[in-house]
Length: 437
Ligand code: NAD
Image (cartoon, rainbow, N blue to C red; front, side, top):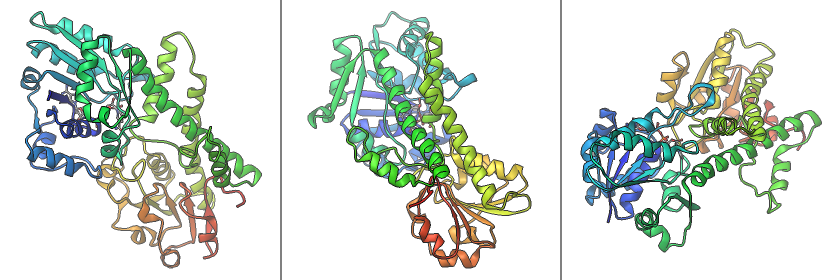
């Protein structure tokens, strides 16, 4: 059993910390935000993530998981320290490494013997070496330590399942000793024969960006095809389904929609472009993916304006779904923000509902009227826009929506419905890439 400190209790740190405790390690999760730690100690999860509270509760009850703001004590008492702090977008798309640097400085100052530092945040190539240097500069004694890169691939909304049963684990390490420790930390995954790739820190760091950029590229690709479908009268759903039957392509991440958002793809794609630039080369495909995605979000706004008759000024628009995808309350880079801010700027008023993201959305977009359910949102609106494909939006009573709305017009930015579901009830329907079925 290892004693592990996890620095940062966001989506990755908290899910990872609870997961590592479930694997049999003794884990202390550290955050600098005292309120977060207080809530966790009271059994509350500070964000919405299905299944997480059960894993946290079980491991706290069984004495393997605890929470603290005292980073110094955690570093002194543990033999392994995971870094899972935020790496937001910085200037010009570069990665803001200030949280990682801060964590490395604190680790250096407080370590009092050999430590394995495991870098879990998504960071540019070379960061494991950078952490090593910062720790060396801040160490008070002469302690041996190693830095391992162990990028995380979990998805918000299914984070617990993804952490417990990952497609692969990547360990970028220089020494056999560090690899051996990582094997024992992830022992249950070795026993279930999960693919574990051991490589160098640089390769591990790049694997994460390459994976996210590839998935983002699939999304931008199908969105570009969807736009073409609208010009030539083809149906993107059938195009995507049929493409996906080819095993070399596969059906996943080929859903045309409002463009990708969230805390990872937008910043990681831009970061990869910057990483390539600073390495003296180009990432042209990824740069195009970023641009197509930006345009796709604007396209949803243009579609909504068109659906409202060319002008939204003075009109009331309803929006269903605010989070960047279902099953999360994360609003970072959500497509709904581009849509709603665009509508408000043009003089529309907006009323909206999301099952879990309204509190976060309110702090970003206070001018929106947040209502209690989809039917309240439909009342009196000129256009109803589906922005997030929550399951509960898939089975709405379309006749009831029609009675409530000022005009029977929907914009389905996620292709949740078949066009005929609405057309047959006398609606005007705007989907994404739904030329002709
Ligand atoms: P987050 O912003 O939700 O959480 C980061 C946490 O770290 C915050 O609670 C912050 O208070 C804390 N923190 C920062 N500096 C600290 C310090 N010095 N001491 C203690 N606490 C500190 O971030 P996240 O979404 O969990 O992402 C973390 C990293 O993992 C990022 O690099 C991200 O790109 C990567 N990642 C995220 C996901 C995801 O789905 N969210 C998936 C894979 C990888």
